Image (tube, rainbow over all chains, first blue to last red; front, side):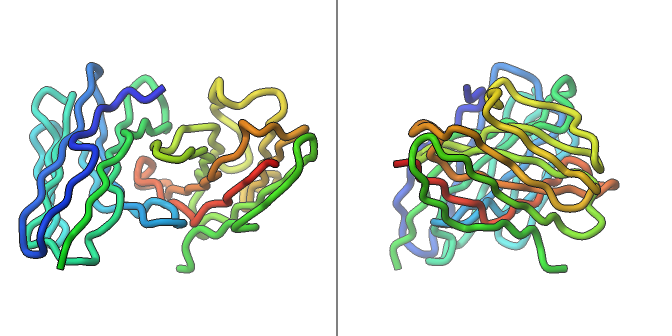
Amino acid sequence: GQQLNQSPQSMFIQEGEDVSMNCTSSSIFNTWLWYKQEPGEGPVLLIALYKAGELTSNGRLTAQFGITRKDSFLNISASIPSDVGIYFCAGRKETSGSRLTFGEGTQLTVNP
Amino acid sequence: DTGVSQDPRHKITKRGQNVTFRCDPISEHNRLYWYRQTLGQGPEFLTYFQNEAQLEKSRLLSDRFSAERPKGSFSTLEIQRTEQGDSAMYLCASSSPGLTYEQYFGPGTRLTVT
């Protein structure tokens, strides 16, 4: 089963607002990734994080690898309608080879 | 670079039938992964290949499931004697030798078992 807890499960925001979501676990992960998925499509990689404390940006998206290595955060600034979708965090443990463990996703709705 | 492709995009089958899905990874990506995603959930790992070698299989991959990557390029996932519980999106991903953990996903194959 899923080992990553994502919150919130869903968000309804107005265009232009900033968004924050997070992912937590009771286990330590060595790599964190954030994906976005739109209906009927596969997840699209947004950001990859490799070191505790690392802060990485991709345009209006910023993600952080938590210091404890048990959590990660994603922020979206100045949201636009095309940000709509489901955002998934994914983590890789040192003991799990290349397999990724995914959270259950945060559904983002942006009202114009 | 054309990205990961999967075929078919949709498959409807009757319970008990066998189905096979194909995945073509990004060229020069040596690792290929299969995941399954059910409605409202994140993807769950099934198996992965490095070149033609199948290196890891999840407990989710029952005896009815088999995956191959015979020449280290495309891969197939076969489900025998399908059950209604097999209905899901089957996702394929690939990664490069240098950035192993950055997995790029295809559009998926939506399987419906009636």
